[in-house]
Length: 370
Image (cartoon, rainbow, N blue to C red; front, side, top):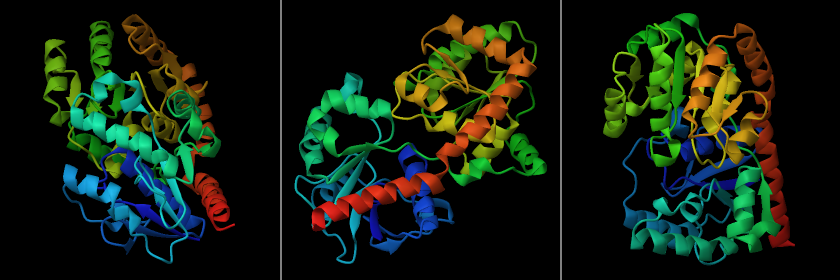
């Protein structure tokens, strides 16, 4: 099959959606599917190159984004069998070729804080009107499909659940010296090393983690918390300072995937206190590497972690302190979590998940073409 994937909104491959696009293209290539990118000129995507071989650029302006999603994406190359829009956007009309849309989450429809302005409310009203024009929808978790049942019940009949994948870089062993070089680069020197990677908006709940770690460190003379990508977030650095943790918390700038893999490998524990997710990519990555996971007990993350990590009510500070202490004080628990989690995480390999996407593409094309 010839598949076109909308890469119009990609910039520097720093977001979860960009990670998803990169992994999906990698998996489809291994499945023998021809993939081109649209939205940044029509071009072949290079699955074994960082960022699929696309140049780093600034994100498109709101107007450019709006124009493409309303009009530009309609100009599909004629030799394409299916158009895949890997984020929740579609024009308010059917495309000339079958279309598949990925629904990562319903944050703007479930969390009022994420649709403040009139422009945002108008945009998501357009999204709601346009989704029915897609031939197929992919929800990345049963939790997301459950949210769709409440917000878009009329679309469930053409919605299938396919979990996100984890890039193959997280499944391979890394050179010990390489890990040491990267940890030295970021000034990491303490153990136990507790790692957080993810976003820093309100729902990610990093403030609760910082509060819990202040109590954990009161009883432990050594150890450090690493907040990946927090260097650009003044509010997070302020919370660290107010908690008196400047000496025990390392904040990094944005890191490459190679560096992130090394940071996972160098860590003793991964923590993820998010209050709402559509999937939970970082916990899946940690499981693939073999790092014990403690995560917020929310439907999507519970679905990812299952019994292969510890789940804590996101805002329960005492629960976080207790869970972190249990893992750090129990080598037997750590060994069990590492071995079982790594074996379980194979289910997130993109090579396998891409086959499920191929089945969706084939069904959409068959139904449209009779």
